[in-house]
Length: 181
Image (cartoon, rainbow, N blue to C red; front, side, top):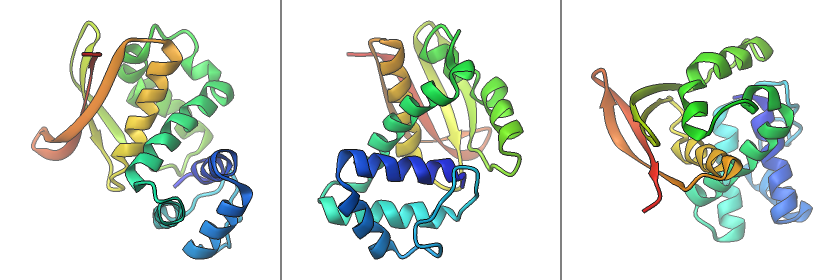
Protein backbone atom coordinates (compact mmCIF):
# COMPACT_ATOMS: atom_id res chain seq x y z
CA UNK A 1 0.00 0.00 0.00
CA UNK A 2 1.24 3.49 -0.80
CA UNK A 3 3.15 5.20 1.97
CA UNK A 4 1.13 8.39 1.59
CA UNK A 5 -1.83 6.49 3.04
CA UNK A 6 0.22 5.75 6.16
CA UNK A 7 1.72 9.22 6.56
CA UNK A 8 -1.66 10.91 6.10
CA UNK A 9 -3.31 8.48 8.52
CA UNK A 10 -0.73 9.37 11.14
CA UNK A 11 -1.26 13.07 10.53
CA UNK A 12 -5.00 12.65 10.94
CA UNK A 13 -4.52 10.77 14.22
CA UNK A 14 -2.25 13.51 15.57
CA UNK A 15 -4.64 16.28 14.46
CA UNK A 16 -7.92 14.70 15.60
CA UNK A 17 -6.71 12.86 18.67
CA UNK A 18 -3.15 13.61 19.83
CA UNK A 19 0.50 12.71 19.32
CA UNK A 20 0.20 10.54 22.44
CA UNK A 21 -2.64 8.51 20.90
CA UNK A 22 -0.52 8.06 17.78
CA UNK A 23 2.39 6.79 19.88
CA UNK A 24 0.09 4.34 21.68
CA UNK A 25 -1.41 2.90 18.49
CA UNK A 26 2.05 2.47 16.94
CA UNK A 27 3.19 0.66 20.07
CA UNK A 28 0.05 -1.48 20.13
CA UNK A 29 0.09 -2.32 16.38
CA UNK A 30 3.86 -2.96 16.45
CA UNK A 31 4.55 -2.40 12.72
CA UNK A 32 7.83 -3.80 11.41
CA UNK A 33 9.36 -0.34 10.96
CA UNK A 34 8.09 1.08 14.28
CA UNK A 35 5.83 3.53 12.40
CA UNK A 36 8.58 5.17 10.33
CA UNK A 37 6.72 5.56 7.00
CA UNK A 38 7.57 7.69 3.99
CA UNK A 39 4.99 9.02 1.55
CA UNK A 40 6.74 7.38 -1.43
CA UNK A 41 7.29 3.99 0.19
CA UNK A 42 5.20 0.83 -0.11
CA UNK A 43 4.04 -1.03 2.97
CA UNK A 44 1.94 -4.10 3.78
CA UNK A 45 -1.80 -3.42 3.86
CA UNK A 46 -2.02 -5.40 7.09
CA UNK A 47 -0.09 -2.65 8.88
CA UNK A 48 -2.72 0.03 8.20
CA UNK A 49 -5.39 -2.42 9.34
CA UNK A 50 -3.47 -3.04 12.59
CA UNK A 51 -3.13 0.73 13.14
CA UNK A 52 -6.86 1.28 12.56
CA UNK A 53 -7.77 -1.56 14.94
CA UNK A 54 -5.46 -0.09 17.56
CA UNK A 55 -6.99 3.38 17.07
CA UNK A 56 -10.46 1.90 17.43
CA UNK A 57 -9.45 0.22 20.67
CA UNK A 58 -7.81 3.41 21.98
CA UNK A 59 -10.76 5.67 21.13
CA UNK A 60 -13.74 3.33 21.43
CA UNK A 61 -14.88 4.40 17.94
CA UNK A 62 -15.84 1.80 15.31
CA UNK A 63 -13.02 0.97 12.90
CA UNK A 64 -15.23 1.52 9.83
CA UNK A 65 -16.16 5.02 11.03
CA UNK A 66 -12.49 5.84 11.60
CA UNK A 67 -11.55 4.61 8.12
CA UNK A 68 -14.36 6.61 6.52
CA UNK A 69 -13.27 9.73 8.44
CA UNK A 70 -9.74 9.07 7.22
CA UNK A 71 -11.00 8.87 3.62
CA UNK A 72 -12.64 12.27 4.02
CA UNK A 73 -9.40 13.67 5.48
CA UNK A 74 -7.39 12.10 2.66
CA UNK A 75 -9.56 13.65 -0.05
CA UNK A 76 -8.95 17.05 1.55
CA UNK A 77 -5.21 16.44 1.29
CA UNK A 78 -5.56 15.30 -2.32
CA UNK A 79 -7.27 18.59 -3.20
CA UNK A 80 -4.11 20.34 -2.03
CA UNK A 81 -1.40 17.95 -3.24
CA UNK A 82 -3.01 16.80 -6.48
CA UNK A 83 -5.13 19.80 -7.39
CA UNK A 84 -4.38 19.34 -11.10
CA UNK A 85 -6.22 16.00 -11.03
CA UNK A 86 -9.28 17.48 -9.31
CA UNK A 87 -9.52 21.05 -10.58
CA UNK A 88 -11.63 21.43 -13.67
CA UNK A 89 -13.97 18.56 -12.76
CA UNK A 90 -17.62 19.54 -12.87
CA UNK A 91 -18.43 17.68 -9.67
CA UNK A 92 -18.29 14.38 -7.84
CA UNK A 93 -19.92 12.33 -10.61
CA UNK A 94 -17.50 13.75 -13.20
CA UNK A 95 -14.57 12.97 -10.89
CA UNK A 96 -15.75 9.40 -10.24
CA UNK A 97 -16.15 8.76 -13.96
CA UNK A 98 -12.45 9.51 -14.37
CA UNK A 99 -11.06 7.39 -11.54
CA UNK A 100 -9.75 4.47 -13.57
CA UNK A 101 -9.00 6.74 -16.52
CA UNK A 102 -7.17 10.00 -15.99
CA UNK A 103 -6.72 9.90 -12.23
CA UNK A 104 -5.35 6.40 -11.68
CA UNK A 105 -3.20 6.71 -14.82
CA UNK A 106 -1.60 9.83 -13.30
CA UNK A 107 -1.18 8.10 -9.93
CA UNK A 108 0.54 5.14 -11.60
CA UNK A 109 3.00 7.53 -13.25
CA UNK A 110 3.90 8.91 -9.83
CA UNK A 111 3.82 5.54 -8.06
CA UNK A 112 4.52 2.77 -10.60
CA UNK A 113 4.30 -0.05 -8.04
CA UNK A 114 0.91 1.08 -6.71
CA UNK A 115 -1.81 -1.59 -6.61
CA UNK A 116 -4.84 0.60 -6.91
CA UNK A 117 -8.43 -0.53 -6.58
CA UNK A 118 -10.50 -0.74 -9.76
CA UNK A 119 -13.64 1.29 -10.33
CA UNK A 120 -16.22 0.56 -13.02
CA UNK A 121 -19.14 2.83 -13.80
CA UNK A 122 -22.13 0.49 -13.81
CA UNK A 123 -24.67 3.19 -14.58
CA UNK A 124 -24.75 6.95 -14.57
CA UNK A 125 -27.62 9.27 -15.29
CA UNK A 126 -27.60 12.89 -14.18
CA UNK A 127 -26.55 13.05 -10.55
CA UNK A 128 -27.08 9.35 -9.86
CA UNK A 129 -24.33 6.77 -10.29
CA UNK A 130 -23.68 3.12 -9.51
CA UNK A 131 -19.96 2.46 -9.23
CA UNK A 132 -18.35 -0.96 -8.81
CA UNK A 133 -15.32 -1.10 -6.51
CA UNK A 134 -12.87 -4.00 -6.76
CA UNK A 135 -10.00 -4.46 -4.36
CA UNK A 136 -8.59 -7.44 -2.50
CA UNK A 137 -8.02 -5.10 0.46
CA UNK A 138 -11.73 -4.49 1.11
CA UNK A 139 -11.35 -0.82 2.00
CA UNK A 140 -14.91 0.21 1.15
CA UNK A 141 -15.05 2.57 4.12
CA UNK A 142 -11.97 4.40 2.81
CA UNK A 143 -13.49 4.67 -0.67
CA UNK A 144 -16.76 5.88 0.82
CA UNK A 145 -14.89 8.51 2.83
CA UNK A 146 -13.08 9.70 -0.28
CA UNK A 147 -16.41 10.01 -2.11
CA UNK A 148 -17.94 11.89 0.83
CA UNK A 149 -14.88 14.17 0.78
CA UNK A 150 -15.47 14.84 -2.93
CA UNK A 151 -19.16 15.58 -2.33
CA UNK A 152 -18.19 18.06 0.39
CA UNK A 153 -15.44 19.59 -1.78
CA UNK A 154 -17.85 20.23 -4.64
CA UNK A 155 -20.64 21.32 -2.26
CA UNK A 156 -23.20 18.97 -3.76
CA UNK A 157 -26.44 17.70 -2.16
CA UNK A 158 -25.47 14.05 -2.72
CA UNK A 159 -25.18 10.99 -0.51
CA UNK A 160 -23.29 7.73 -0.92
CA UNK A 161 -23.76 4.22 0.41
CA UNK A 162 -22.64 0.80 -0.72
CA UNK A 163 -23.62 -2.84 -0.76
CA UNK A 164 -22.09 -6.10 -1.93
CA UNK A 165 -22.90 -6.98 -5.53
CA UNK A 166 -21.42 -8.32 -8.75
CA UNK A 167 -19.91 -6.79 -11.85
CA UNK A 168 -19.37 -8.96 -14.93
CA UNK A 169 -19.80 -12.02 -12.71
CA UNK A 170 -17.17 -10.93 -10.15
CA UNK A 171 -17.95 -10.00 -6.55
CA UNK A 172 -17.60 -6.25 -5.99
CA UNK A 173 -18.85 -3.53 -3.73
CA UNK A 174 -21.37 -1.26 -5.42
CA UNK A 175 -21.42 2.39 -4.43
CA UNK A 176 -24.63 4.32 -4.97
CA UNK A 177 -24.17 8.07 -5.36
CA UNK A 178 -27.45 9.93 -5.56
CA UNK A 179 -29.27 13.08 -4.45
CA UNK A 180 -29.72 13.38 -0.71
CA UNK A 181 -33.12 12.17 0.44
